[in-house]
Each structure stands twice: as C-alpha cells, then as structure tokens.
Image 1 (cartoon, rainbow, N blue to C red):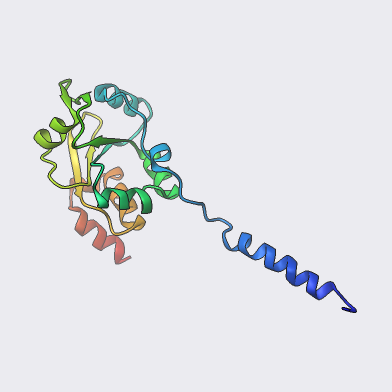
Image 2 (image 1 turned 60 degrees about the vertical axis):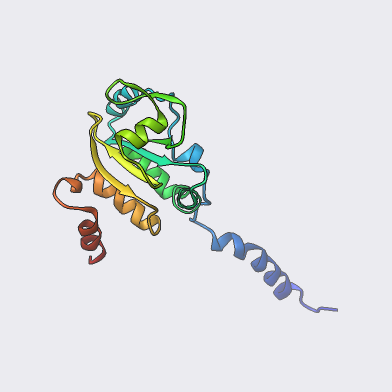
Length: 181
C-alpha cells in the first residue's frame, strides 16, 4: 500500500494534461473546401464586385483536376492550414475551377464558357495545380504552376501578390530576398 499517494496522483494528472499542453496554440487542419475556397455560382464579374466591396487585393483562381496528386497534396498539406486560410481570406477571394469541368461560368470579360474552355483555352493550363491571381479589374497579374514546397512558400506567394511585389520582380527573386532575412 502506498503511504503517500500524492506523488503518484500528481504524475497521473501530469500525464493526462501533457498532450493538451503540447498542442496549445496550434490549430488543427481545416477542410479547405469550407475554409479556403469561397462559394461561387461562377459569375466572375459579380465576384469582382464583391471583392472590391470587401476591400480585397484581388482574386485567386485555383485551377485543378480531380485526379491531380499535386492538387490533393496542396489541399491536404497547405490549403487546410488555418494560417493560410486566414491570410488568403483577408486579402483575396479564392475560387476553384476544374480544368476538366463542363460547368458553365461567366468569365471576367462577361463571356459564357465551360470551366475547361476557360482554363485550357484562355489560360493554357496544361498541368495542375495552377494558382492564377487577378487584380480587381479581372486582369491576370501573377501565376504559379505546381505545388508549393510547404505552407511558408504558399504564404510568401500570397504576400508577393497582396503587397504588389509582382509589379517589380519575379517570385523566385522575392523568395530569395525573404529567405535571406
């Protein structure tokens, strides 16, 4: 029989609290379909108006396709991170477009096209994912093809566009300058 159960009780309480303390301040990943992408009916002139009214810096289109492993990787490792979701939500309206999609949309120019036509003909998307940024006039301003290495690089991409660095340098140079700080 234990004469003084206090040390054992303290160890048990510590063992139960340790996992909770280890995760304190770290948020769990969240579904990007609900927390990264904005809902849309594919009326992109209206989305531009909404972005302007909300004080956004622009619109980001995520060109993807269902069987793309790099698109899935971005969704499951980067776009599901709360810090990414919050940053992009603050600065951009974000929409997903299926490069094989037959759903009709209205482009920024007011033309009705399928998602596939818009992606492949207008933006020559040949590999996915493609992150295409547009200014508030619906003009393409920056593009990134492929998956980013990690969350940090994707946040750098957002900052590159949101702060207007795309106007005077390419993303590779911007990253190099950021990484050297």
